[in-house]
Length: 195
Image (tube, rainbow, N blue to C red; front, side):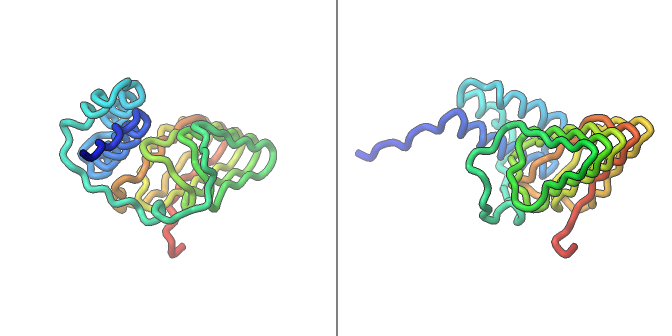
């Protein structure tokens, strides 16, 4: 008699449900508000049955991972859930291959900061990018197919999105940009491979 495969752990179940919800969001089956509500319940769930209930009303979504996220990359095995970038009266660059945490705080004071996500390893679901910029310039460069929810507040400053209109890729994360810009310039742009 063959042994039954082990039941998935709660952590594996959460990862699976986040992937399913992200795929449905990318297909516009879920609104951003509904995605956020369900993702919050994913991390509150205490059993596999609770997790399964979060996707039971959704059909099967095919997941085609974005090409930029499929490549094997040499990234740290352990990625912190939360990280910060601080730049005071200087210049800070985060680019190339790096692991992006689920929550990234950026503080820029009288500085020039660039965050390039085009080759970064992006986690599934929503990535919270909280920016506080004072008399600074902050540039955020996204790969194609990643959605942006811009919730920045400005005071004597500017916050611009130069994102493309291409359809989102299935399984691609959502960047939730929030924070304050005071006498600062915050710009978000998409870089295509040919650029």
